[in-house]
Length: 295
Length: 213
Image (cartoon, rainbow over all chains, first blue to last red; front, side):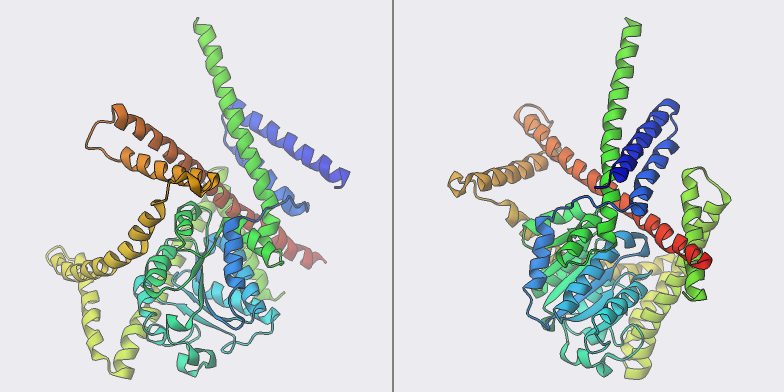
């Protein structure tokens, strides 16, 4: 590693420690915000990649997709709002790269009204362009439909009944790829990328009632609750937050924004751990001093 | 870069910085961004639901495919507006009753078969030490964790004696769970910040560099 880079990071840690000291001294939390901003901005400006290990749950999901026969049909969901793009979009991008590399037929959909349909359209078209895939033959964007429970149940009988047209208004009957896809029985795997509780319904409705294998990419906030489903074998694999997205990017050997963001993530976590220890040590020292003064 | 893309990036950057400005203190830029977001979201949502539900799932099937029975769910939907009248708000209960009955019917089976039974099954593990040390310890942790946590939430008897001891073990498991949730939540929030910082540095400052280059 470059000596200047090490020096820059040492200075960054010293600046963080000074700002933390100022926060404790003045009781002004804005110093903490400033130090977090330093730790996030600096790694984006100066490239340094800290090692990121691959978790078993991400490897499980990768292996499940890898085990699909080439040209399988996969339903990829974009069940997330623009507010969580930093975590979820890299998952969708990495998933699409993996699926298109395996020549899978990709069906995309969303149950999220704000942003979901346009994110699916933008991301899928961009990645499909990189792999020379053609709309209507290799992939189709079904778009959005309200009432996700009815949508998930209804697609078990007929996808066309729920989505008479694709996202741009073309009737499904006129799309070549959809001629062989009637309902879940024609779908080999479901890759649900979500920032809300919809994954619960992919598990409890589609996996439980239709026996479809479901893999999930979820935000870090909701990741802990899905480990129970993973252990029970109800999920084929899982990506949790930006770390999960970075792991999948590394597994498909296409590092993207999640891998780049992990250095900042690690630095901020180190800072928070240090802040918690320093905060508690300061509190205990103050209490001891007060106790001494009283005595 | 087209002029549309350029404007798009600058609008996103303006609203991002306006929202971040709240970290310093409340200010008119933050409130402007907040109000525009709320208004835009509501407007977009109304338009989307009108098109994807009312038009695509009711009007079009009725007139194009002759599915006139869709008038009944449509009518139930209209009844919901009676909530705005003090005298006739009771009528909306008819629609709500339909929704509740329907939801209960769907969820009863899916929750039972999709969540309760598989989750119960996955905690019923063998405690035979012959299965290997690691597996045995893991099974022991799951069984003790589930039982002690369940006992912690049993409030019909005072938590004293053996019951209190087991409930105390349950508290430790709950605390570990809270710790995991907290760690993941920090990661989630920082990820969102990283995403916006990446946008500001790569896209917004990048657009500035392109102008001057």
